[in-house]
Length: 327
Image 1: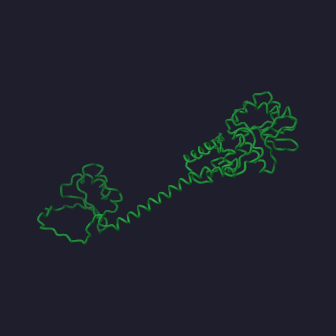
Image 2 (image 1 turned 45 degrees about the vertical axis):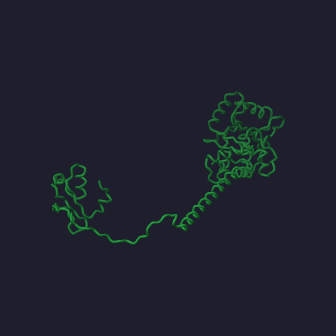
Image 3 (image 1 turned 60 degrees about the vertical axis):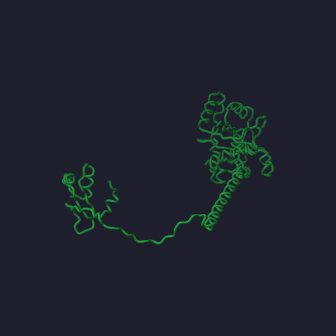
């Protein structure tokens, strides 16, 4: 069956006897015949055809008969025009061609070697580049650091992480934040030494990597809004340190971070409201909405919640992350 493009660009069409209904239907459409002519297309004798020309004064189909002419068999000897050509030779007979090919092959090999060395050099430098970015941008998720570097395949990212862990230059955690896991990197003292940088001093906060990152994000959130914020602040008249404390009208807004376990949430409430009288509000921070529901259920089932329900709040860490860190 000819394509529609071919049929639309055919100037002369000869349709001989058609045996199947589909071919008869298509032929009628192409020849612009009435559907009543379909039986004619199936009963054409040998040498008879329906002819139509598309670019002529008369473009309608017509019935034609083609005379039989026997093929000419005795044409005599056939002669062809001679064309100039250069006979082929062996490569061994053309040393200049061999030399030229050898030069091209060597240049190609040299280019491949240079590319391979460049790739190897990049793969060796990428772990230290990630480490350098982490030192310059503390408490930024690894995914954001890789975006600064450029397009790095997932397999290469895993290799970089393994290299830094094996060298003990950094430790990693990937807590669930919102709907996805976020890989976090904590540079070790050996990592800073490898970069030739001084080891940062000051209060980093307590707990695991995720716990400390969460605390730093909350602190930065309030500092960006013009407030002071303190890590590991010990409540007056107690020996109980809270993860983050923000001064508020001669009192304190305090934050406790619950990354995985909820074992000590009741002790936090007692320390804030029964052992101290300077806490305006206590906010528990978790990573996901699912954890938030679990924590609310646990706390609200305890009788102590009834006494301080208006001062106890619950929130997710995403609300304290700057816009660039959420992506």
